[in-house]
Length: 562
Ligand SMILES: Nc1ncnc2c1ncn2[C@@H]1O[C@H](COP(=O)(O)OP(=O)(O)OP(=O)(O)O)[C@@H](O)[C@H]1O
Image (cartoon, rainbow, N blue to C red):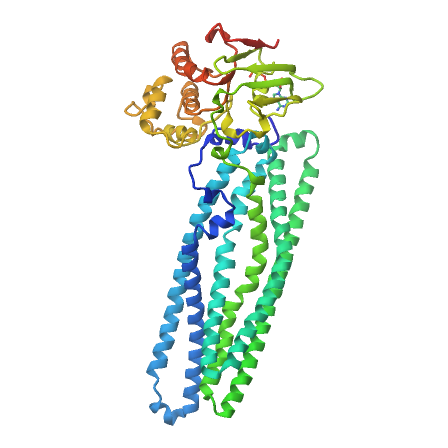
């Protein structure tokens, strides 16, 4: 309502959520993904290496067996031990299938768990941003960060780190086998092929990084524009800008698909380069092995085994360029989840600010500098002396509260909490109960736990009783687990308001801003809620916008705009 972004309103209740996570989880997402899940990642890489080694063994052993059978001829076949190689081939085939299945299960289990954690972390970060910083994020932007950017990160463990480690292990295995069977020249050739593919991967990585960065930024721009278009459709139609907005969207989509084409071209080029290098490597190994066979140092079947082993290694090496070009996209996505060094609610300056004074100097409030709603307002708020803001409907009471909460930029002047400017304060410093603050479609208890995650059923029930919601307290007719429904459809307006009051009482902000806190309550409910609220209000600075100043103690100061 008060700015370009929907995030503040949507996150209003979430913003209070206090993280109890370890400091590791607050570091950058790649660290969380790789260090936090290192055991799973190691298991994934090991299973992938096993898959590829089994693949190499399968191809090489099959080649050896077919060649040995062919060379032995029909007559001598009876003398050839076919059982050991056949068992080896079957074992390699079975191992390859089982290891591949295990790699998929372990890898995805690990990554999906980590992505879920990252998503919660990112949500907490956005919700904990000071309102001023929160408003800088457009709704499409924070949705892109929470969904698409986090999804992009799954490439790092699954398509970058695990395949690279597994490709190195497979190369090591193939080089060792080649060295054992045909000497150091064959081993060097295997390593040479791997190094050549690695160079191609680095080239693809450099090209892909630029492409990936542009893709991530473009995707965010496209989603922001799309949501702005859908949200503002009525206004765009009224001002005749619908076609222009559609054209912008189409242009963004075209640019995005051009970038995707560019990325596919890099991937295809890298894939062909790997196939060419592996093909050349296979031919080189065949030539080397045949010359060793002519020398008599290795048998014919072993020569074929060596050549096919290089061919089999191609599957492992083919993953390297993909790892390179995906890294750019993932790094760009990870950078977008940094939120400019945003801090979580409990990272913000040590609290104990609950007793701090709030000052506003020469504050000008409004939506239009030519018609300010409040002009040159000076406020000195002391804890224990709540200020009532009165005035007729539309006079700017909510606008003043939104400005004090940092959700609406002042037209001039500034607000300070203690010795800090409002922009430096964390979301936990200010609690705004706006007229449109909503409950989430979850249980009453879950909604209360958003204010303080460690609150127990006993404490939650105590507060619900205090605000007159006996039916939702533990053991009440409906109970704490009552689902509030979408838009609190399962609750009356007065009940929803009192759940929000209980939610507010669980918080400990330096500045409490209440907009018509008792709307929808009858006199008895209002009096009960007031007696719960009053001791909480007088422990901090508070500003209350109201049409009913007579509901509050007569000695509380008030300002009025007519
Ligand atoms: N986003 C906005 N952009 C422009 N003007 C707005 C916006 N939101 C509110 N206004 C206007 O600002 C004025 C003050 O609105 P505000 O909601 O602060 O009044 P209020 O005193 O809180 O009213 P009420 O008592 O009915 O809640 C109104 O004229 C309103 O139409």
